[in-house]
Length: 243
Length: 243
Image (cartoon, rainbow over all chains, first blue to last red; front, side):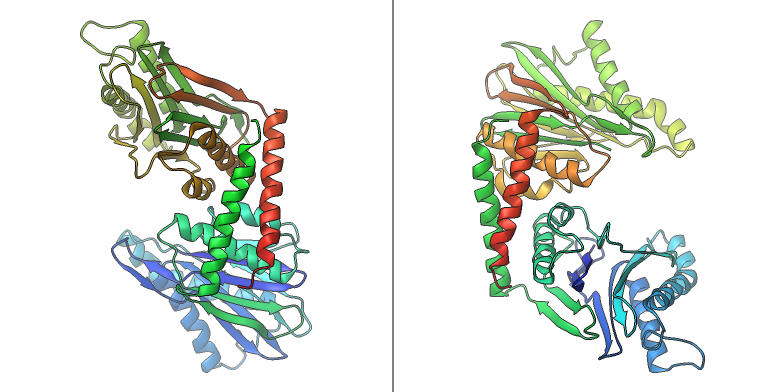
């Protein structure tokens, strides 16, 4: 599986993904699921993928082909006029790819399900974040629910529900996302290090951070251990409570 | 859905369930999922159910019928010689019920999936805990994994993974189970108050606690609020950490 979380704050957008992919528990490997495109000052776009890897890689490759070999009158990720248009492009590619391979996959009993988070900002527009379904349609993050998760979303949902709102500042949201990932990593083998993180501040039109956190990253390990200790200490406090 | 967690400690067994049932989000009601049987000094048995309510109620009713109208030479929950035999009885009933209704349910596209946690202790035996599958087969909790969850298990798994082991003392395990439930309640509408809790100490052969925690329970609300505050405080500590 996968765990990806994207958060849309007043401060900007953040994207965090793991890198584990597996076809059964006996076939695990590492694959990038966070992709970024940037024309500094004009636009910055990030995407994260979950589900059937053949499907999502085909979508990403097709989007890149359209950038590398632009066709007259056909917008691509780097020329689309708005973030809504970007989401439409991604949804259209998803539908094309599903149409091309879906029937054959289904015939062999392979799950073609896939989903994509795409967000970013274009000059003159606001930062926006979309969740694209396998059918190519999509929904947008709003102030009421400022985050989307794809993949193994349940383990890491409680902490985000508790601490993140649209007013949360970016450094805090990064910490919340990392804690959410940490809980997921501990409880689900199909989600694994390293992690990819991208941070896009509102109106910056360029990524403030694009970072891989490796499994042996000392800072992340210390962070993870401190959280574990904090939870254990909190638990000790709860022991003194009659219930 | 449902969330039930049972933990097997050296100290004894604990069972915690929610009481929400739903056939779609527009048809929510309250139903008991934790059942106990006790002959003080001889045996104490508890069961919790998840999945298709028609299936699990049929299993419980059939088990009770066998107690109320015992048949010569046929053991029931109150006469089975060992906890392993109890698990076999439950598994057999599950298989009978699935055989009787499974095809008709499948024909209408209704999911007949169900699972049952059954645990307890019989005089002369040790406390044991089993997870019964829809097929009637089962697995047993061991010291390596001293707990089982059924239903919406993911939200509440991280906290149990972090703080519960077979050596954990009963009051601490009760707190861990309640925190696990609290996280699930916050993140999933299909799990709801009130809660049912049963505690069975090793060699007591009678339940130390059998308790319903209502939605307006002041103690549980204060407990839930304290945990929320603890998590927020822990989060503030994490903010001071470079990552």
